[in-house]
Image (cartoon, rainbow, N blue to C red; front, top):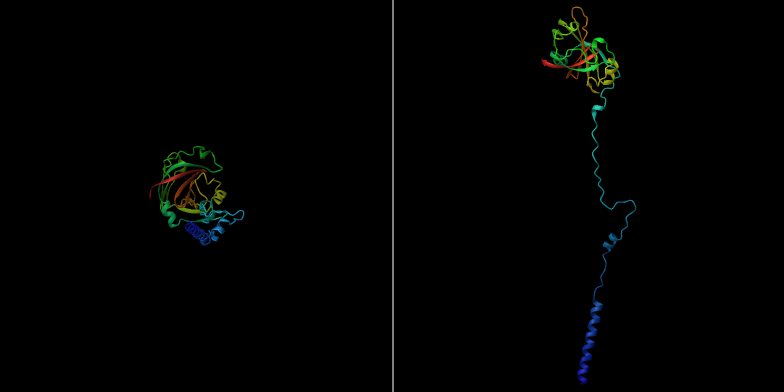
Length: 223
């Protein structure tokens, strides 16, 4: 009996010693310093924690049509013959397409507010011949000239100078800020007397008839 008790006590002592060894050899859990630095980091006031988009938005394009390219205060008086580019555009048969409007000052002959009855009438403009016989309702405007004198009298490079000289609202004629406008007069080569009508050439692209302070858009029928 004593021998059996001694064996039991010995076994208990061995188990107790083994448990103590397990406790002393277990590794304690340690925290990751790098994680702590991230978790415990403080953000200064006013600084956003999200990623900032540094891509700048493109600047809006500038509308060049509202920037004057030529700021000349007055139109240029040239009083010269037509250049070849203007001749190419100007010569041909033209039809009166529509009424545009009136100058600031007009007379009874302007037939305000409808304008003269010439819509659909035609002009013949050639280097050696000019005819306004197509204005069939107005004998006073009917001319037929051989070897007419075409003179470029004024060139305007912006709407301010155009209005200053001709006293016609450019908007009425659909003339834009930077349009180049040439004023063309016609004379009889034998008498050197001018006829009572004239033309505006806009950018060598449009032709406007001026008749008694009334302005009409023309459309080219043939070259």
